[in-house]
Length: 606
Ligand SMILES: Cc1cc2nc3c(=O)[nH]c(=O)nc-3n(C[C@H](O)[C@H](O)[C@H](O)COP(=O)(O)OP(=O)(O)OC[C@H]3O[C@@H](n4cnc5c(N)ncnc54)[C@H](O)[C@@H]3O)c2cc1C
Image (cartoon, rainbow, N blue to C red; front, side):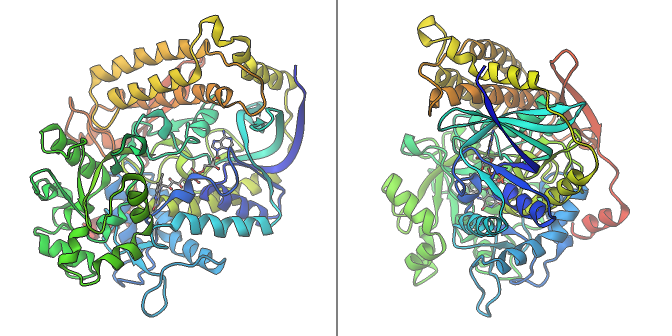
């Protein structure tokens, strides 16, 4: 059995995106020893890709904004199955978290009088997104990274965590391996914070990078934690679709926030054709009003292109399915038209959307200041994840915390753009503080060496089965899983298709068990992919089972065979756990009653 190094911290943070870094800063500031592990290089997390901005009701651009409006917008967007306590804390604390980031050195775009500028985004009533052009995530990561390095946090880069270790049901540590040399490490830790991001790589068309294989969700599930709302996957309406090599890459909602419009192949702005009843009063009923809104007219209502992502994605899919799509199977997103309205449109677009300009110029040879983009839905985000306590972010396993995209609750059935970056800051901080507090409590959990040996043996098994023995390679299994999830558990679902997906998952699990890899442990991408497969299969099964259980359509979950929202399904969350027989179990957990004060806020904002 290969040997392993043992490293000890009070709190171990797994994941160095916005949530992990903010959590590490909070835990370290509370005076405990903190370790931070990440799969890639520090600074390369998903958060760095975030474009549009951070939602916080700073009210710098419109003084009518405030936590009440942000809370009500988040709950409406999430179709009221959100954890209302998290939505309340998020709306109240996000402004302070953004100002704190500024105090630590983040340079946001400014208003004329020098305050943080805020932009419009889908589902937000007022301009609310603090941003840095369309490179907000980069600024956020840069700032948090600087700050955490100065606090003396131990960073373990290019290390993948494979297993959480428990002692009598509470967290005791984690097993990982360094990707470069394939050596194993045991991290002893009294508390662990998972901040591992999303699951986008379970689908073939996605805006997510290679790292997002649902590791945190699967690690937590295997350690006995509950997952919640896994059926709610967000398909962002605007991903690139052409050329094929760039399919899925995100086109920020900021394009629509700056006045970009969606048209079908007949030139029609089809979003005006289908405005949901619960958004009608807030939505412009003509193009002129929509334009005025994007230019900051306080009396105008938002254009229908800025309705919630689930709705816009389905409208695009409908246009394509009914033969009104663009040549490569999407629709047209046009920002170039604003030259009819603004004398300096070209400079304006390049200044406001520099990454989009370069992305299309370099990857698709399209100049977005003169030519419409072709776009279509792309798997972007998962609202579901690890079930946590709203205040502390502790999961159902003592000592195991989760924050950011891998945690569930805040966004309910659909996330509003910009609410992820603020989620990372608000709940990263809380997770760090509560984990530090937990780690200070008496007791010192022990790690069972037999458990470690067993996990190492499992990790090395793919080398026992060289491909010549007839098994599949890991890439083939991963690709077949992605294609199946895209086709059968994608943007529009039906019960029979998802039942077929469950059968397909059983076959894929069997193939994954037989996957073999050649070579040795030193930087071996085939081995890394083989190890990711188990996580992808776990989260895919959780998404599929929960989606079968939810026999209605709500937010990111749309079923062609149950197209209406059913109020009975608004009363509970679907929770998934590992049963005693190691099979996945589903339960319906009632949503706690919302306090009268919060109910009144929602009524007031209708
Ligand atoms: C292109 C794009 C644009 C976006 N724009 C916006 C936006 O403008 N506003 C907004 O609010 N949201 C946006 N989002 C969503 C938002 O960026 C993400 O939801 C958010 O950054 C997730 O942050 P996180 O800290 O939870 O995880 P991530 O930033 O995803 O970081 C996860 C970390 O976990 C590590 N990790 C994963 N598995 C393991 C493992 N097994 N062992 C060790 N480490 C592991 C990774 O290496 C990484 O360090 C965007 C997303 C994309 C893809």
